[in-house]
Length: 530
Image 1 (cartoon, rainbow, N blue to C red):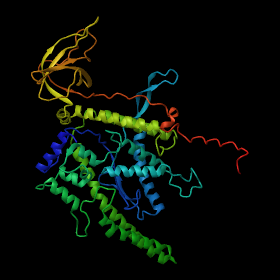
Image 2: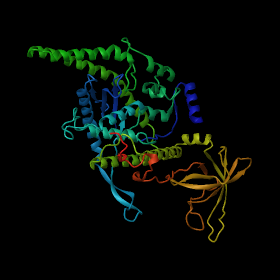
Image 3: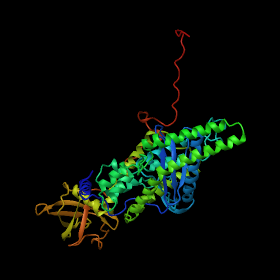
Image 4: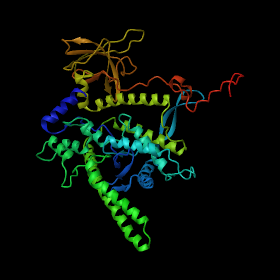
């Protein structure tokens, strides 16, 4: 945690209200997101109990599994979920635009630009908390390898036709959620915690009701008091007034309400199966319908408060202006969505259970690169974030007090102006260290020359982005009196070393993918006892 984040949390405790941690919104919010509030069964990982899902704030779809241990009812739930999610995804997959992409020519080996299709926009799935992202990852893993009756007529438990496709999409969204700055599958608690600093721990911030209580507490109540009520207050039946943000349920709800309701549902199903005549069956069917309706009401009572809280959190986030680099990161999300759409249409197999060594290393390198890029872009977009980097000695801001024109030595001298900046910051600058400032959206590099006036003045030599002429282009060199901000970190991240192709992976790192050839048996000799 940075110093400025710690200060913001201390100020939140002192003032009784969450403090802004950003002045702009650093994540993309779709105009039409698909909100999903899942609920799971206690004691059985990945067993869904119900969900509220939809794009309409006032009319969500309620999906319920009346008996989570029943495989057929689980498949019916997942099939209903696919009927809601997949048409939403298809709506974005059909609208495309022309875009250019750099690829390697297989014949010449040179990098060339080719025109390809890019989805004009991308879908966005929003869940209440980080646990919801992990639950969708688990659902995707459990569904993408399911065999349908069309694929394998002899499979013992065929899945509905659209389930494997939904599993592949959920797996892709969950994998993309691991990329820093990606917005295809955000958790509202993470979005709010990024833009506001509460007076509680980061673990407590995963309770959506408590976090909203810190950000927007009721009149006359501090954030700490409102958060405590959100976490602990119960009604006359002992049920939480603000249920957890899912997907786990409260033990009091499980023991006092849900378990008896499921038991009544099981008894009604057993009685209906044992009915001997039509009249008796009608009566018992009515009892089964009533038991199922009771479970639906219980699930809705646990998910609807969280559903409303998610939309309330989105309202708070939409009030912030979008950061300058958010659109660039969203474009990379669009490329990711388009690439997976193309893989599905091409009939490629689902994502493997485990990545091979090269794929895993590439993913790790990409996430590290995106993390560094995200941190740089957030600082450039947001003065409050940049203030944190200045406090840590990774950037400095000030006013230009002097500009002296100088030139490099050589046959063709190039402009290398010396710029003196007065600053109150204390950056960690070493000899000939490189610093950068944003010039028209591009990073301009400068070289540290030295300090003057006991460190209050920093002398820099501008080294690029001044044009090709003997004199610098207008606006490429700061003038006396201009405010400037230089960073010690690079604004654009460089690519790492190229990894070998999967088929060239050495055996020390997993070897080529696929099954290894069986070793040849030892030759039989006369001494062998058979």
